[in-house]
View 1 (cartoon, one colour):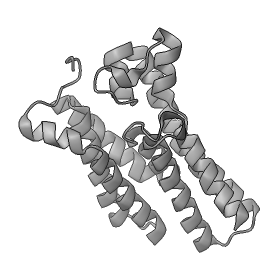
View 2 (view 1 turned 45 degrees about the horizontal axis):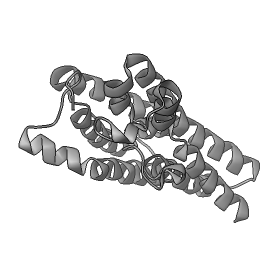
View 3 (view 1 turned 90 degrees about the vertical axis):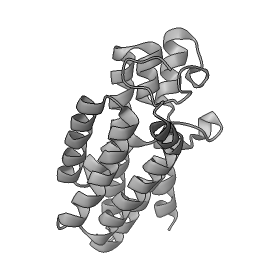
View 4 (view 1 turned 45 degrees about the vertical axis):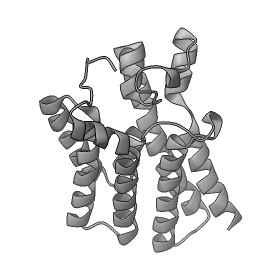
Length: 205
């Protein structure tokens, strides 16, 4: 039980690493939460700092999700946790890393919207689901040029794919719960989408 709690805590702390905030501080000495959309995610980094920093933040945030799942699998396998029990434990670590990214311990429990970190969790958990969601994200972004819309539709796509593919029940519940969480974090974006004021890629906020 102690190692189980340690694994979940480690996933949360990994997700809490404020990549976008650190990029703003290191590159321009600014608090990115005071600029653009005030998010610490890669999209606001793109608007505020440029393409290079945004790509770096995106990759690191994705890797946080991948690392959390891989570490959890290694840790619980080393402890000899049986297959079904390990699946549930790994999924709780997946939720923890999402929570850490959006409610960072180092930023007063604020943060990003967990889309990139969620993609990392998907890729490590079930690469066909992650790849399908990523491709759908790219397709929607190419057509609409609205990151929030592409992120939410990719979350819905992931939930559909994980239910269609022969994935274990814990994985399905994690992807559905994680997708709903990402959508809830985008509630302000939903309001702007309905009002027709949601900014597109390249448009100033």
